[in-house]
Length: 192
View 1 (cartoon, one colour):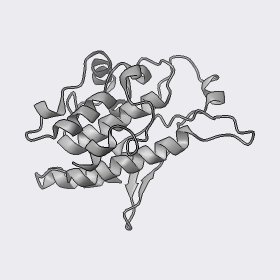
View 2 (tube, helix red, strand yellow):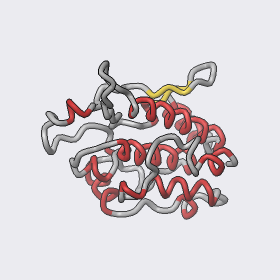
View 3 (cartoon, one colour):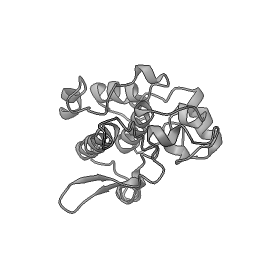
View 4 (tube, helix red, strand yellow):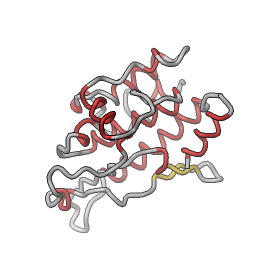
């Protein structure tokens, strides 16, 4: 998983290669979009939400393919309607504000988590520090994530714009889909 690669970079005191981080996030975005657009046998949208996008759940194969794993806590529309209110699942360090507040989640929630992944890979830091428990998650749900340019010298303005949009606490301000490679973010991402 990419968590191991992050640890190796931290031990060596070097940054995760930015181009690789972008390619990994684009691969995860593509996997999320496929999940979000999944349909049942009758052609009805399943409205699947992963709810656990994190470095531990991203694998880069020996051939360079990006795999998003562990859909164990993913919820489809039919199952979300039966989910116990107030029950939180996922890793606190990668939850969206709405997920932390135990509100209904949708693809925008996965986009926020994708933004956290991109932030962490490209800055080698978590937006609100290394503590990942419920208290820190609550802080993140109430306070904007710091601009990556404020924590990482020489950070690309274009990439910062994408990260900041993904990490907007207001889900309506995030990208509408995970198709970052075909959206208005594509040129900025691919030019990094």
